[in-house]
Amino acid sequence: MRRRTQFDGPPVGRLCSIVGQAETLGAGVVFEKTLGTENTLTYVLNPVLQRAALVLPIGDGLMRAYLVYRASQIDRLQGAGDVPRFVDESIRSGLPREFFVDARAAGPLASFDMTESWVDHPYRDGLVLIGDAAGSSDPTWGQGLSITMRDARLLSENLLAVDDWPLACNRYAEARTDYFRRLTRVHEWIFDLFLGEGPEADRLRDQALPLLAAQPDRLPDHNFSGPEQPSDDEVRRRFFGEI
Image (cartoon, rainbow, N blue to C red; front, side, top):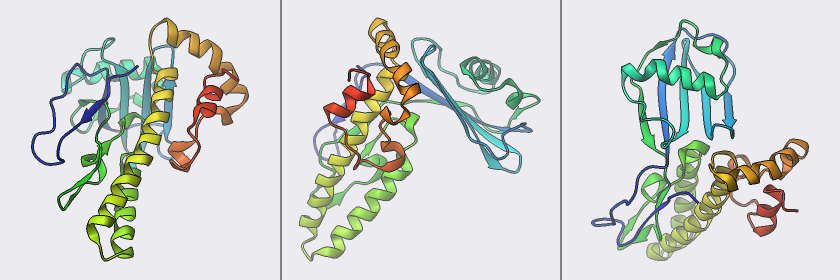
């Protein structure tokens, strides 16, 4: 299983120290003079190498590129000197080589720990946390902004519904904890299948990937359809090809 960090204590002040090393890193950089990416977002999950790669156009001939990789396999990619290696590893992960022909870095290359972190109850003593302050999901799955917008909507709806603001904030905190846990539960499954390493991960892929290719609806759709989607044991077993 992946390392995940849970904070305890009040949402302000001492929380706790993060123990252990990053298991997965995500590196990103903006390129200019790129080819073939003007109208297309390309995302590759490579379970053989246990990594993901992504390119998306951001206008004016610019392309943002990301590489998610196991910290045990690649040293931290950081700074201008690592841009050629970032490109090589992105192509090795499955992105088309032509995307990077004559491409030139137009911004800094940096990498970050992709570990989730959260507080148990994002409200206390008049202070409410939303977005990454309340809990950040693994950025591999691109849910940070969606969660933040949902948090803001849900908190405002609760505040407008009653005059008792501590009650409203506690209701928000309980609901937020519930849907965040649903998402991280499903993200854990997806990570274990596509980015996990070791004999057990290989066994899961041999079992599940052929079934997912034939029946794509076995993949939990929470990243696009929201955390209200079922995430019970039957969903997990179907995803891993156990039923």
